[in-house]
Length: 94
Image (cartoon, rainbow, N blue to C red; front, side, top):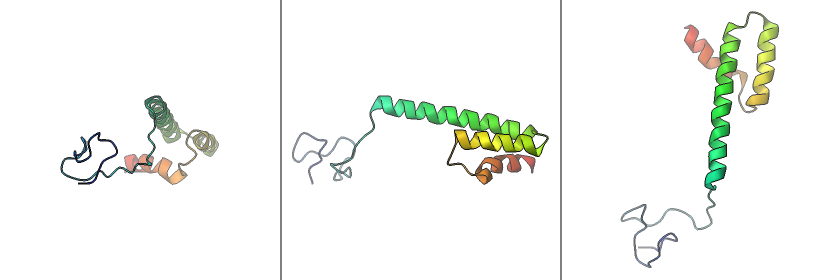
């Protein structure tokens, strides 16, 4: 059995996988817990904002209102396309 960099003994199996060699590379970097928590918080906040924008978009009466909402979407979620944004709205209409 190969040595796992996480274990303290030469031939001991790693604590996370029993009977298999370690699959984690020694040069793998991990995110610290405070960073991970802030990342999760930002993701949840973004999801809540997108949900609110979808609700506004669904009830918007004019194209000008929809355009403003799409501009706000690009500020909140830059990676989201307009198709990804409107897909749940279209699915609800059907």
